[in-house]
Length: 219
View 1 (tube, rainbow, N blue to C red):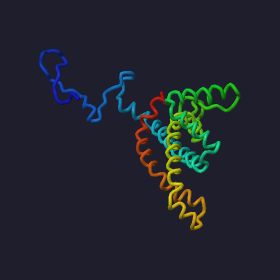
View 2 (cartoon, helix red, strand yellow; view 1 turned 90 degrees about the vertical axis):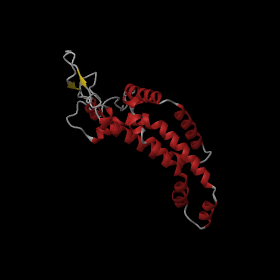
View 3 (cartoon, rainbow, N blue to C red; view 1 turned 30 degrees about the vertical axis):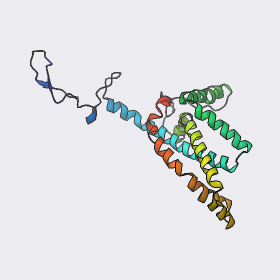
View 4 (cartoon, rainbow, N blue to C red; view 1 turned 180 degrees about the horizontal axis):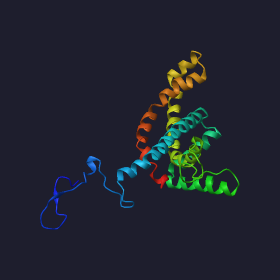
């Protein structure tokens, strides 16, 4: 900031005017070069949309990653497990911009050429609509959420599958079966509860991605 020292604005050789820039540490980011507006106001206008997109992508990673991981563990070495494992490795190895470009090409370009319902590739709402509908927001979120959540979903699925397989043959699982507990209760109350411990760490590491992970997709 420059509020702590005087400047010579009229070039008369004497410093008499204090600056009005408080500095980043005091919340003053200055003015934007592009539109000559305060940077804080420009950021405040777009942060809500970024939070909506990042939060939706995080929830999608958790829901689909956990579901796919549990299913793959319960059907170990089946054709479904092999397909899930292969797709998880491929998706996890791809950069996010490639996932985004492939998603746009498939679900927006090709679907439109094939006469199928296609997803929009920009905006949060339909610009031609008279009002902002929640269903319209979900339709516009589908493609960017898919692009952001695909890699994280593959990572979650791999961790959950590995955790489930690790505890599946534990002594307390065999004891639960010997007591006559149902498989559904054993799976979700005993196996999943212990296998999901790494999930808390993954979620905590992904929380910062709510803001930073949407940069490539939004641009």
